[in-house]
Image (cartoon, rainbow, N blue to C red; front, side, top):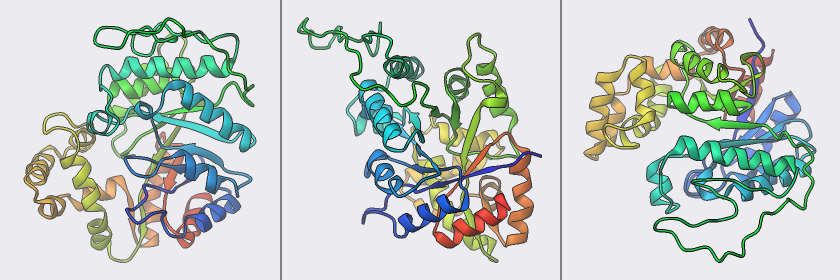
Amino acid sequence: MKDLKLGYSTGYWPPTGPPHGVAEAVAEADRLGFHSVWTAESYGSDAVSPLAWWGSSTTNVQLGTSIIQMSGRTPAMTAMTAMTLDHLSGGRFICGLGVSGPQVVEGWYGQPFRRPLSRTREYIAILRAIWARQGPVTAPGPQLPLPYTGGPGQPEPTGLGKSIKANLRPLRADIPIYLGAEGPKNIGLAAELCDGWLPLFYSPNHEEFYRGALDAGFAIDGARRTRETFEIAAPVPLIITDDVEAAADFLRPTYALYFGGMGAKNTNFHADVAIRMGYGAEVDQITDLYLEGKKDEAAALVPTRLVEQLALIGPLDKVRHDLEAWRDSQVTTLLIGGDVALVRTAAELVLG
């Protein structure tokens, strides 16, 4: 049985602003031996600014983005951000990336959601070329050519663009990249090209799908990592309470949103997670209700057992028992969120 690492996730910000108590929780996680601290972004607060702000008071933890949305930044901008934060943190930055989904990519960033796998491959290649700093960076495209070449339906280039070499030497040319991924091909891409994987939903009781997808990536000639050196950092809601149903009720709306309200009715990678776990009939009902605007009714249909397979909820003894499945899994780091008290409890449970 392996040792699990712990990460602290600050999560998405509420509409009112920064979550209360995060600075104190980050400091405690740093003190207690957590492996990492992670920030997130959707279409409100960004992932980079809070990481720099809260991370500036830490000395030990790795500092990761979970995730930087690729459509919101050019590869060069992300490469610059990563080099900057890696220098400022003394080599503790983890570049967590993801394509997000068509609703956000097209509706929020105004970018086309096309060929996400090949776009990710091009994006990561540019990051590594910039950090390697072996010469002016060029990229053949077709989605992210450097210099800009234009194309059908795009503005013509001026012809003045030139290949550029970063004028900052990175502290590390091998800044780790973790990929947020849910579909099998995207998970395989993480194993092939990256140093780690950031699943959104993970169940240690249903690992066959994930293991197969990762193995397909590791098997590709030239894969960056092996299973033994690859990191899997999975977010796990942690709620210590004697009332399991109340804890499940607290989480049900989130799962209903992702399983029933994200993507299109027949194209939802989030829902596919629950479907693969055997909850296809429930997902169909949840989706129908959610898309009809009956969000509370949709949430009520999320099975408690499904919640328990994705989260750690209940009394301490139950959570300690359920934690064993995570220790036996291929996950290397559990990402939890909460206040200082929960940070301490998580450290006691996981780190001993």
